[in-house]
Image 1 (cartoon, rainbow, N blue to C red):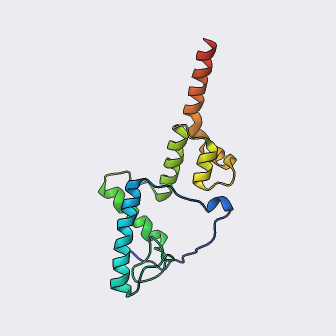
Image 2 (image 1 turned 90 degrees about the vertical axis):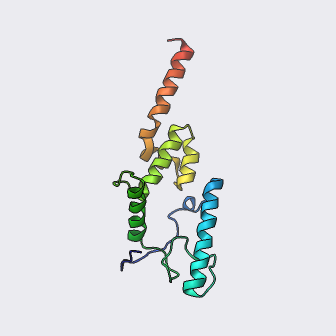
Image 3 (image 1 turned 180 degrees about the horizontal axis):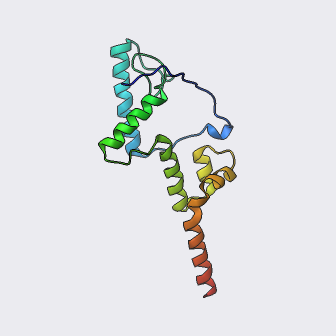
Length: 149
């Protein structure tokens, strides 16, 4: 595990929209349950205590502190390399990919904004306007077909 001396800052979300539910598939729920069991074992074995609800999901072994961002990024890069994925990706790119795929798939902007934790859908529109190009083409095609142009 890579550890650095970087400072960890834990703070409340910027807006109430940032405090939200995250919806997982059954498969993801199963993986997280398995990971939690590993964490419970490690905490009992190495920390000689029980894992609590206040413990971080991604944390430093032997401490009740979150994993440092550089360690998380380092592990993410290992996953990319192991699976021959582009190594120029970063963790935040997963958020952008998710939002772009939701929009391209026809999810309304208010729902996407809520999932991303944006207080206003206009924020989502400003950041992801490029993702609406497919929707614009489809809307134009539908209008033309309706007008028989």
